[in-house]
Amino acid sequence: MKSVFKSIGLVFLIIVFIGVCFCVYILQAPTIPEAESPKLQVHSRTSGRGRPTVNSKPRFYTKNVYLFSIDQKYISNLNYGVLSGELLFSVVLGMRSRYGAELLDEELKTKYSWQQMFADAEVNVSFSSGAHKLDVLISGQDWVLADSTGAAYRVEKAGNSLDIYLPDLREAFNNKRITLSTDSKSTIEKIGKSWLITDNKTQQTYEIRKGTKKLDVFQQSKYPVVMSLFSVDLTSMSALKEGNFSEEIRQGFAKLEIPLSRNAKLSTIEADVSWQVVDGTQKYSIRNKNGILKVFLDLESKWILIRASGSLTGWVQRERGTIFTPPQHSLSSRQQLKEKLVSFFDGLTGK
Image (cartoon, rainbow, N blue to C red):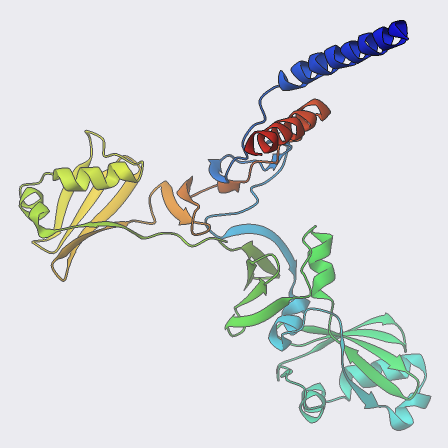
């Protein structure tokens, strides 16, 4: 019996020893890194797996950036405010439904008053009164109708009627590898010249401008630029009058991580009212507003200040600033066990 207890005790000691060794091994795992907060990073490539990827572009821009061009036919989508190729209206052909293909093509080109037809259909689209153009895709079946502004519509024969459709602007964006969500809206910025497409899901806005033969698509800035930097009281006025920077003004720039260099130049724009600061590629203005000296950022500066959220504000290059969100750390199995073991010991200590 004693030998049995002795064997059990020996096995227990061996198990305890192995357990202690295992715990020591787990606790010696590399330190679990703390989660990093998003930061502003400047580079011309996006981040993938924590490092730049080849031939990529910034995810977020600090100014409007040209993306691509599309056909002017999509003006019809932009004017109507619908991005998909939906049916606008149908027109009964009547006797023309019995015409041969070539004769029907000729009728649609020369005899139809398309401007009146759009007006009678009571759709929120005005067909230009100028010369229109009708291209035959399939004789007697499918056509593309364009007015003098370049806005185009797809016309299809369906039995005894003609169906008029919008082109598919979403597909045009998809072909350029940009997907517009279903929560996207088109608005007119300047009639016949520029439009905005706002994607509320991605919080991204695209500006579309009419060129000579194409529509040019630009990506707008996603984050607001901070213009007002800081304020100081009027005690700094005397230094400014003498062409110098007060200590309060220098500290204000230093707190924003843009300390003024020794070569920073101060010039008076209007006596006792406004001054300009030029420090290399950076430009600022100081203005006397209601007894307070306010310092503003000039948008012609190379570096601008943007606010992505309440907690994320930083300096990025005006030409190619991006926001970098560090990827979450992937813990090894050993680190995961360490995390659980430390949590267990903490709970044990608490009890």
